[in-house]
Image: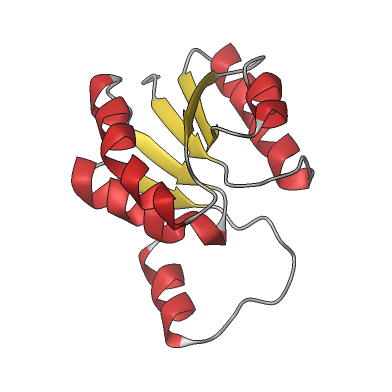
Length: 131
């Protein structure tokens, strides 16, 4: 089985179900021999500490528009670590992840964690078709 290098992008500010999911999946991926990286905001010490148990933690300024200035550094992390897949775990992070996808040529997965009905505007329809 091919071993993948996966970057999970988590833009959450608090620990919840989606964050636990990323933790559990990362732990299992590591157990299966994949290399797992989790990107979180540089100010969120709780998420950094928890994810360090199951993955290599990468930090950047993600919580505000200044996060776009982190794109080049994260792009370099992806290229330097030969990451295969960018796994976006937040609707808020889609644009950030799409930019990374286009800059690196890597595959991207968008995982929606909420159980709320999907939005039906053109933007969300496009996202569901493409990712």
